Length: 188
Image 1: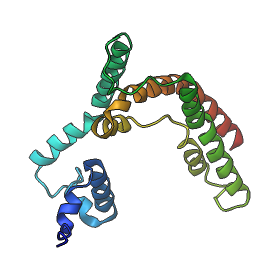
Image 2: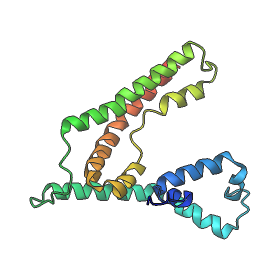
Image 3: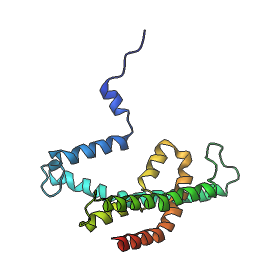
Image 4: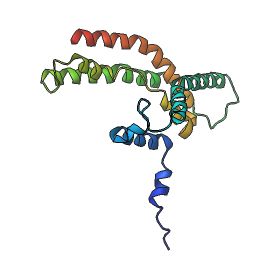
């Protein structure tokens, strides 16, 4: 006999925690339930919201520590001749170049061109320069650090490659973001 299908609750709880947190955050932000956790007018007691705010403020420093540990582990394993076969092979420089160029050059080029085109055909307001700058700039930064946390949970073999991508992207992004910002301000 066929096994019964899992209940809705068991299917929901089997989803990855980052996905559930994202949906929960969007739901809370779009509804009036945000008054329960907003620090300024919180219904919850301050002894609950204050520790939550302190934990949330540690996310970026912990991501930086995580990235540094990943880079160090990759560097150390590159000198280990007895490395485990379960570890992913090193990333080719051509693949790294394609990833960095596509994220830091190609994607912003398309986004800025599309925003400029939509402004020219008057689908975006020409008289709101802040909106145009934000729309153009949002595609220029490198990848977000949260991806490395998901890689560690679900595909830890790719952790070294991801750390190498971050290191190169963030080094090059210091130049490309300034160049893109200069171009955007010249266009607008």
